[in-house]
Length: 279
Image (cartoon, rainbow, N blue to C red; front, side):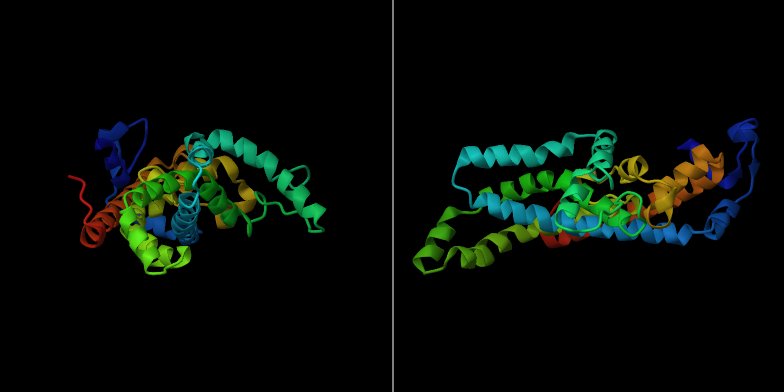
């Protein structure tokens, strides 16, 4: 925490924390003038919001489908398969996606070509890159959300379905009248708690507290900086690559404070709407 003082200094490693010149809020004013800074903020928010929305919709849909399976062994096998990517590092996954999404030899583009389409450079085209980040993150994390929603579905009283069946309600009607209303508190809770990671380009409760930095840093390139650069990759380039330690710390400090506010807001809404409490 003491190191945060360099956000208010013209920090020099030679002079150290106590010897560097104190310049007040100049670093924060400088950040606002960095070319493309607001574009980076917009990229972060755009990628985060899409991740949050899809990381709720896809797991709910998959959980509803799995809930309809009557073969328990098949259900457990599918759960394990979709949950497995959650444990893989983005360093490993980046290597896989570079091969799978390659415009010349990748599996995805081979399928596109097979059906007469034009190959797409998913990781090198600035228009495709943000959507590729969102979809690959959803692929990695939807298994985690599916497990959470399946746990909620298992807590629904089966007599409600029996009563609905006696009243003549079909499976679709039961889903809209019993299953989805029962899932709503969990859906709201997952959405609200994800607010804390919105400035990290994260997207789910499983990645709240960490960030999308690992994913994007391992997959992006200068060709897609315009649409793929996020706050944390900018901080990395300014701080470690550019040697602007004070400026990078100032950005990180503001981001952390805003994340704290958003996370507190998320917990407050979760308490009000879903009766969720940490303690």
